[in-house]
Image (tube, rainbow, N blue to C red; front, side, top):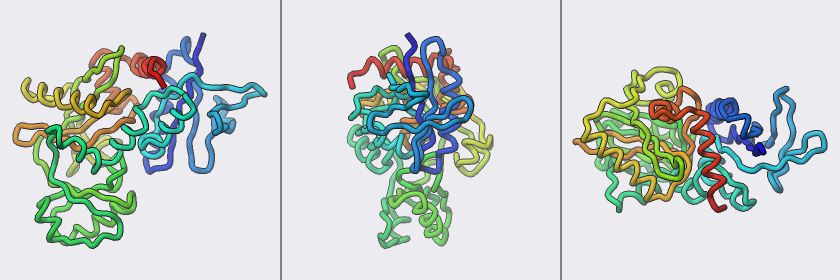
Length: 327
């Protein structure tokens, strides 16, 4: 019997348009002989199911069900394709866990932790995971440019603490540009992180639970045409994404070990994509994404394809893993 799968997409952040594209690819890729897929758009003002004709049906938030022609549809599993809030920061995870509905993302706590770059890096440092030097600011804090530069140096990166797709990020070369970059970051979040610049090869590593086991996918090397891997580089073709990455065997082994360790230390499940820069021969963690892009051009699907895993297999496996988990 076909299982009813709700694909949630959209969300409340600047990444909602990317999420809609990811959700549509999932919708088109699922095996129709196994799954009846429903596109559920999650927006602040409404949660709705869109049918193939574009008609809207409201979601009953009491039990996450929909009514179609007087028939109530409940979902066997939810495929989470929301980048940013509320799909990647723990809110939707907590909601589905309270309702007892299986979902394809990690648990509420892990989602909240990985979405907060500052807390994530602080958690992993005691385990020996290397990362850049950093300086933290909350909205309203006094900005001491001298202290910041003494801690992280120049150039440095100013980032919104809880944002993805490079929204709210700037690379700063001069002291006089620091405050402007901080203002840009605060437009995305009320917490920011300022990190030292690491010069080296940047790579992205997908780690998933596949057939019940942790699996590290082929590594992608990021070569941006821009000053760094910004929004245009990620989504407008202004970068080269080389899979498998042009790494030495030693580099590959090092980053694979670190990426798998991060996944298992954090007790993640479902999808993850972590970014690293090799500095002085060692991979330094930048961030962990638990709802990475799912379009055909996105990094994790590229890596899965390189590993011989089709999108139909990739997404179907995530659903089966979720169904097999204890909620």
